[in-house]
Image (tube, rainbow, N blue to C red; front, side, top):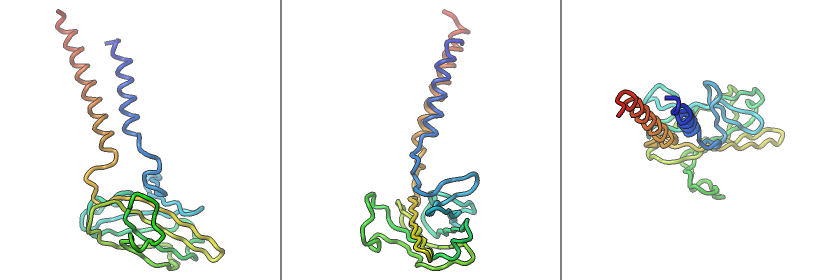
Length: 190
């Protein structure tokens, strides 16, 4: 059994690295911080939540589980943002640089407005699965102009980490088979 310690460590380390390996900027400016989703906007940030009330009471931070009625909620973290205008645009992710005319790929738009209570709530019905980009624009009275983009998907059939989980499960299965074979070999010496 001593001969298996080093390979066991290598397999477990590789599986752990694979499970944790995802692109750092996969969801743009949205980051999960503890139990909250944080959207970086200029030097400030907002708390972000998505809901699909007809499907589940659970909020999502990144990808919408399915098509249908979806509610986005953005809460200002800094009070000074309450005096600035904010707009929210959802566009189809065309996989390239956004065109000069965003209207051509816009699926939903909330025009600029001041939100003195610090909460933007926006509802949209997604009819199609696909990849989208949320664009939040904040404009201030002193020339501030901050744009934050966060890509997300709607109704993705699999999570981005699924291949890594499958690879980790295959490595764990191979390790168990190797241990079982080693154990069987020590019980029945030929």
